[in-house]
Length: 284
Image 1 (tube, helix red, strand yellow):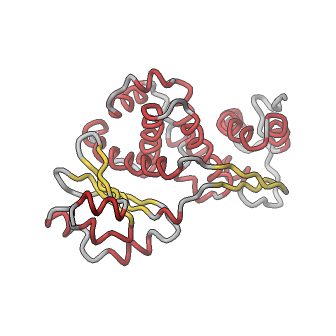
Image 2 (cartoon, helix red, strand yellow):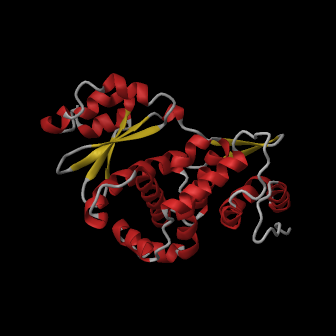
């Protein structure tokens, strides 16, 4: 069967990256996808089909980097696991956030991981940390949104999704790229992002801002997030990491307002001891 015919049946297709291609492959057509690869590249994936099916359980998309001159990797998909709504429990209330065009955003995020792999050598000249992979992949999403959508609505959706994930599950801290996305969304508009034809140039422009959070920044913000949203203990620490509360409030407020409106967001921030500065509470 030709690739074009297989694509119509299975949803398998190629996407272009900066220097290579990636093959998007529904997990149930994994064996057919292997046939599109060279024998040497195919050997890298020998005998892992069952493990991949297990790893994809509950996941809608996953990337498999490859060592190949032409193919950067496979993007495995399982659309039946795609989320279209996020739910956040805060105190006694439940808030829902609808996700639009999430399949495309998820695909772009995984493509961003493959771009990050390529940029590790050309920009960073070293292996990337897991968190660097995540923020680069999310920046790739923002860049793609600018080039393919009429506004930043889906870019902010990605931002809100990261906040909701971490407010709901502390295990999502490894994917909390909001400190990076905040700067990107404030410093770059649609026109400026569209001026970067190549993602690498946009990434370099962001790095030139010298706004990347340090390990200590992330450590302290993570600690404050855990104190604010993790299971409450009998010990109240209202002044814990107080010097980070202004920053965390800045990052969370847009998402809280999107979920509950401005007034209720301010009330929740105040009741949670998230001060703006010097112990001053937020104003409505």
